Length: 254
Image (cartoon, rainbow, N blue to C red; front, top):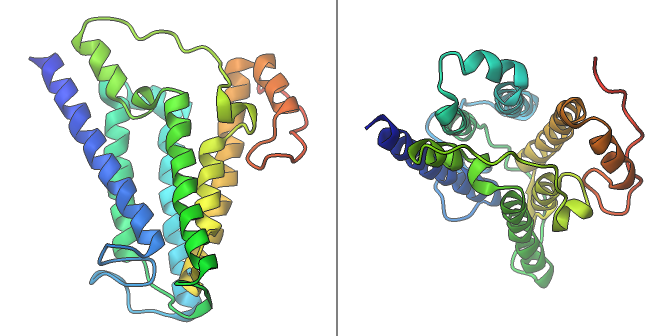
């Protein structure tokens, strides 16, 4: 019974997490949803100008801190003393959803337009690029085991009373071009904007900064876990932008 509940819980968390991600994608694009980066929710503070920009940047910082902190090895070691490892990743998705909801509901729009090419050929090309970026990110998750990343595999192996296969370091497809193709896809989406408002500029800048900060901490963990194998990968493959020089070697943390 416990095993069945674990898989049902993981499926529910997966569905909720995917729904939150889809809403965030549409929130940023300003498509099909009532609350967007330029349309406030009833819970948004009544502020504007610099106050709104600082408020919104803080929301993104809190959102990013939750992602990075709860994904850290130290937190996981502590957290799995109370939350079974079988559902740890699924529970992480619930927290991601809650923080995403907070970001959306409390976002203070800054609607002043910087540029607007919507409805033009360039606008349609940028919109296509926006969804192309998210498609790259989605494909990249499947290249490295989508179902483990989102917690389903852990619950499935628990249900079947089997052990998950030990993940080996692989660099399939996009991972031969850049080390973090999921982040590459997100950056493409962030800056493929038919209509750029001040609020969306704040969102894009804050989220881009978070991406590079998150990569910094993730790579420290990867170097610690994989050692020279990952260092060699860093020396030959750029981080997120194809064609740029790869990283200089980093000393393995002691």
